[in-house]
Length: 188
Image (cartoon, rainbow, N blue to C red; front, side, top):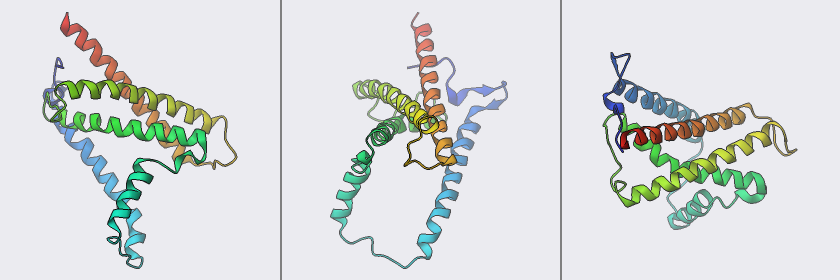
């Protein structure tokens, strides 16, 4: 796919190169992530040491079953299924997010291996994943905001995060629509 003006060569107001923003925005994100993780790891560092390198096979098996398989989520069926849909959807969308960050530095960048049929297959599933995530986030927002189950506690941060996810997926849909329109104009 080609764009009219590549993100790496675009200039805001004809002056400011977008490459600067393509560098600053991920830098701020990584900095905030590092700050949050440092605060969360501080109690673990002060705690008594624990050997985490024993039973590596069992730990990898648990990683695949519990984290990737999301085996604990269906305890509350609706919330669990919504969580699994959002989780796997964002695993799929994270590949596109990574490529978009790099496209900000290098016009026309394609993740190695995603240039041909594999890329077309990925784009097909990416669009469905974005749709599933959007629907799951809307259902979760309605469930959290209107139909509050008794087991759910009020958590302002969780509501903010859900709203942020909705905006992110809506943004992906909007960009996808715009890219489709640009491709249609170029093909004519």
